[in-house]
Amino acid sequence: MTKNKVRILGIETSCDETAVAVIENGGTILSNLVASQIDVHRRFGGVVPEVASRKHIEVIARLVDDAVRDAGLQPSELDAIAVTNGPGLIGALLVGVSFAKAYAFGLNKPLVAVNHLVAHIYANLLGDSLPSFPAVCLVVSGGHTSLLHMNSRHEFDIMGETRDDAAGEAFDKVARFLGLGYPGGPAIQQTAQKGTAGIYKLPRVFLDRDDFEFSFSGLKTSTMNLWNKIKKEGREDTVYDLVAEFQEALVEVLVEKTINAARKKHVKTILVAGGVAANSLLREKLREKAAEFEIDVFIPSPKLCTDNGAMVGCAGYYHFVDGNLANWDLNAYPSFDFFVNKTCG
Ligand code: KG4
Ligand code: ZN
Image (cartoon, rainbow, N blue to C red; front, side, top):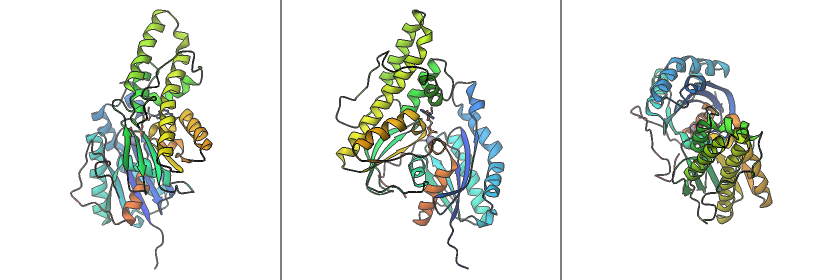
């Protein structure tokens, strides 16, 4: 029998979502389930690592079972088991890695290790049309903000990174300080919709520099200081305008730097990856600006921007077909950077 369908199980447990998906031939999502822990962590105002690990272990077996069933498959019909093994919360990662190893070993299937950031980037390969390379990629998640130049899908050259807070971290910290809730990104986006940017003025940090470095802690602190002043003056009802300006300032820097990077490298493709890529203002502004320079923009659907199993299954598929398999001594790494070796996959 000739087999022309490659089905990969993708497991993601690096932070506060237990996520499992089955991907066929790298681009077709047969199932994609997420057990979010947001409600559990909300009362603490952020992710509590040990609680995250415990929640992952409670749900992972059932979620894998459900994902395989939803895909209409038997476990034996899977071709490989892909799992995120870093970066992320170590206890949380170990749940996914341990489960994936046991599952793959039990089924006698290959194991594939996937870098979480690479998976976010590969989410752009889940759509109907594939991006062409070379490209510039903006990675904006809770822990990372980087601009990369990619000559091919597995070559990553860092053009610039954040010197302090990641974009998502700034969203989360500002939201928490203003009492808008967790996670901060969606809360800020929603609040900003009711306000007007420009009424308050916040800094566009590093926009005057012609490099590709970012810094968001100054913007965060300016926002917090302004909020303290607003409260002292009893003008809390203007929170919407403050938040709209914060979002505008942050997005403007991301958009300008990304476009500048694409122009400098003479590329006609921009990829965006990570949870902050779900932000509607960023999506809109980047597409608008890129159109001026006839640059194609790829951004996964919002559901595929935040942590999910589909992106792991997708990256896992490409690693699998490239023959890049993991050994049974695979470990998890909280802070390993795929940029270190410059290539991956
Ligand atoms: O990629 P991700 O799900 O997890 C990490 O790998 O870090 O990104 C999470 C980050 C959080 O900081 C969250 O606030 C942010 O993505 N985020 C958003 C939006 N949705 C999620 N930031 C801005 N706007 C959004 N709509
Ligand atoms: Zn992520």
